[in-house]
Length: 368
Length: 172
Ligand code: HEM
Ligand code: FES
Image (cartoon, rainbow over all chains, first blue to last red; front, side, top):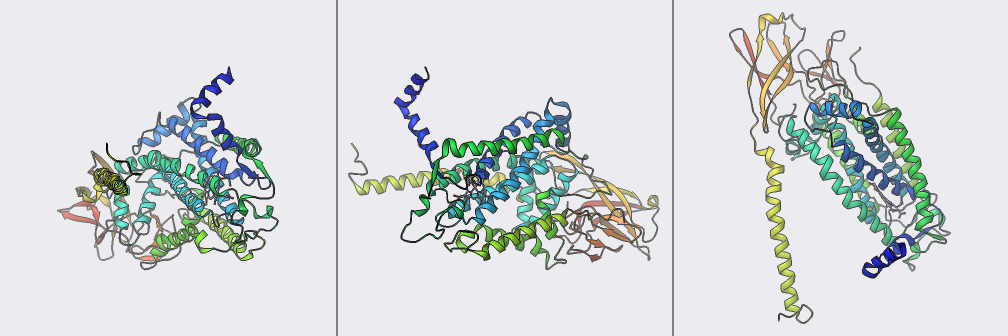
């Protein structure tokens, strides 16, 4: 029976061969666990899309009704708290894992020739995923959403020359209004997910094309010699993607999914107070992944300097990261044989953690 | 029958030019309405309204003690008319002059808190500080507090949903 169905497809489109080609891809034997990070990101993104679509059965992108709709999902829709919780904790986990994925790619030198385009596609995914997180935070329609919209559009307004225009286009006007919510909604639900859906296959196609470099450690001689351009395609020991690598991917996927699910059920998604524009004692807070940036905004006082914290430092930092494969053109991949890059990376991560920690400290003077 | 591109190089060039032209035409034709939808806000005039704040005598102002008075602007936004509740911080100076501040921080717009013990407006977001006359005395804000455009008619104050000296229309 199954054989017949298989034959039916094979006769027409050679399905078995396609599947075998995809599944049979050779993956380096060692470093397999480090490669699961990317798959788990793809898995989490799928979960986000699925949960997001069903949140839309109830959600209304209208200030301040949005917050009540969210409240309704959490408290009145059967298992709505789990659905909403998965969407929130899935988003947090995704951002967290994307950072680890980037760190692993960085420390193992996997962004180097011939994988420059993978890194670029990855950076596109990274930016889009972060903006998805931020716009999601705004969509809840609670007090923090309101102030996040205002603060971030004001940050954008400090971009040289076009800042004012960006702010108005994003908001749909000068004021934060119904149009603002509608714009954010369209961006969060349609525009950015479609970009991710386009770039994940590009990212994966490139990985298949250039092969897994993975942890340089697995190569006896991690230095790529020029006369063997294809050396990186032939690591010492390889295994087929299916089931060897897929098995590891699934184990990590269930682990991560369990964490997300438990957080969704037992912590859930905080909805926060209704937006009260007249509140006199409210201290807005950013999501955890934005705290490092938030901390940056506290420095650089005064008119001439504000552009450093709102535009120059973030965009130069981002540009350097984006262009990393073109800045660091050395061939060495092992983290132990390129101490400068490794130390810089560690210092950068420490700075990020430090800024996040102090950025998260309560700074509200309300009680002074 | 027309020649295939393999038979005639010029035919090939011709086909490629036609393919390119068609793509360009479709692309531009689609880009026009899309750009219109995206850039639309830049071409819309902001709805500016006068709204009554109330009688000065009703506010019981004491010199150098800011009073937070809510004001409700009815403005047209896109396809709907909405109420925008905003705070007007009225400060009576020693010489009797009145200042009408917004409670939005001039850094990135967070809501300011008045701290009587320190006689300062503090911003909960990045620690901006303003004194009672609206001048920056600490933190990152780049300019003094925004002041609402206002007018007096008899004893009544009217406020406009617009700040003075704010060419870029920052603030909310
Ligand atoms: C939605 C986000 C992302 C998804 C779904 C994703 C998916 C994947 C997958 C499945 C792999 C192969 C397995 C692995 O090495 O983990 C991979 C590898 C890779 N990713 Fe990502 N990724 C994402 C974001 C990023 C980001 C933000 C970067 C860096 C800026 C990046 C750079 C790379 C590079 C350079 C490789 C190749 C590593 C190698 O061949 O050794 N990716 N990605
Ligand atoms: S918004 Fe007030 S200090 Fe940044």
